[in-house]
Length: 360
Image (cartoon, rainbow, N blue to C red; front, side):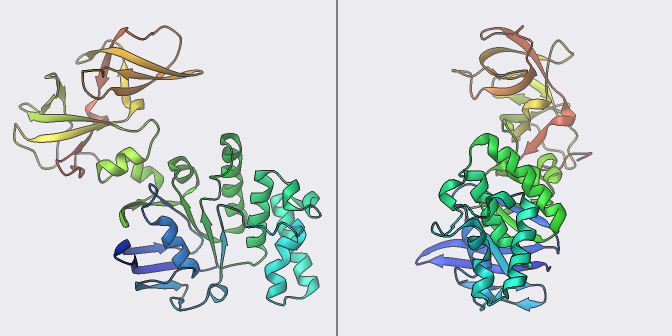
């Protein structure tokens, strides 16, 4: 195994710059997830690490080797694609053994490697089947098995679960986590799904428009986002953002003229300063309490025992999402009291950058 270092990577396709001075460090044995919206450059970056695209500028090191100019086969990596990329005319066993045979590994060693990977992935019973006879989840396991047999220094995964249905994605997330616990191989995993990022990663790299917005553990990014983009990208339902103006006495005035208390700022702002207030749906308390504000429920999304209440909206500005343990007692059109505890608030300046608050 080995760590991965990407130094000031730039990539342009003609006049379009896709990667803009991206630097990443992935520690030996770490599971790092790159997440971001479509078109942010994350898959291009993965293909560059794999050697499938050339850098316009920058360097890539795997362990102590500079692999920037090396062919994919010389880099010590194995990549699993979104499309699985299995050979339809070969059996599962033959698909998994293919890379070793090309590398002229002996039959005994190849057989041992294939059967070891099949045992890890619980697909021993599928070795004689062809891809057409497999489910989506089984095909994905075969694609992962083909990567495992090569015993790479680094695994690269390019949105490997995006073609699976919702239930299978949940199960496969668990299997990816278990696989990493067993093998401990350095992993760089690309996805647009923030749930995958939050559940799988040791560290998350959030990208936007070819740049890195923030790097940290899932908890760090969730609790202390550096800007509104990161704050709203991670978390379902996403963080509410309320436009406001700083008022006297440690309070802020919302767009509708009502007032709420703010957390203490590390660098106090003058009254009249515009800012944005962020609060996650699960941090809004429903029920009578000192300082609670009345809201009308515009819409309810019911998901079994949990509901998302959409408060206000429809002429009153962007609705505020609030999570609620659903007991059937609330309905659309009802008025509820909602509290915004200062300790749960995230404050952002007019550029969308997080403001430092005391205790965060």
